[in-house]
Amino acid sequence: MWNYLIRRSFYGVLVLLGVNLFTFMLFFTVNTPDDMARLNIGGKRVTQEQILKWKVERGYD
Image (cartoon, rainbow, N blue to C red; front, side):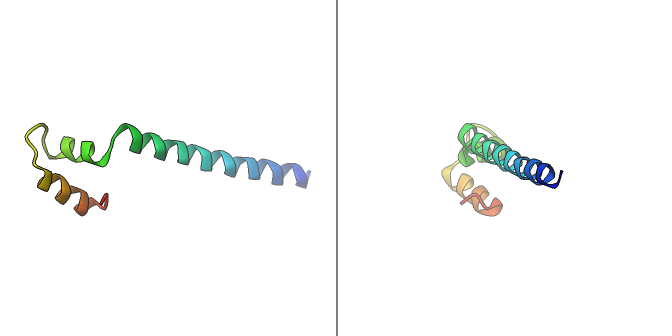
């Protein structure tokens, strides 16, 4: 019984780590930090300096 509980807990931790890694990879491959900055700042007329400032303020540099 204890072996079963330990094994299931181990598998649960592996699944959680896998889901977190998969979500992280999707987040940064679909939306790059430059795209996120451009959307949050205001669209098409955004300078590179504004993007760099946004990334530094939010820790994406």
